[in-house]
Length: 91
Image (cartoon, rainbow, N blue to C red):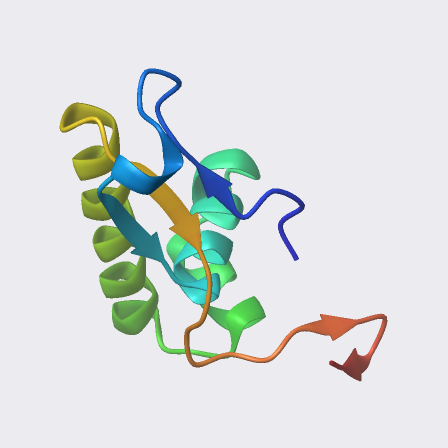
């Protein structure tokens, strides 16, 4: 689980911030591919999805994060269609 779930431009008040929502599966795809440097095939296996599905998830995530950064929007991490495992247990 990501610790901080919302990132917003410092120049905007929380009530006035337009935003984009990055789902947990998109967040995980960014973490695996961009931070951990995993190949799409390896990350897809870890997330238990096909490689083409992983690539689509990652592309959606990149588009949302780019929209947030370029257009000065808040970026929230929430929801999605996934479960979180911690040491073999599903949360």
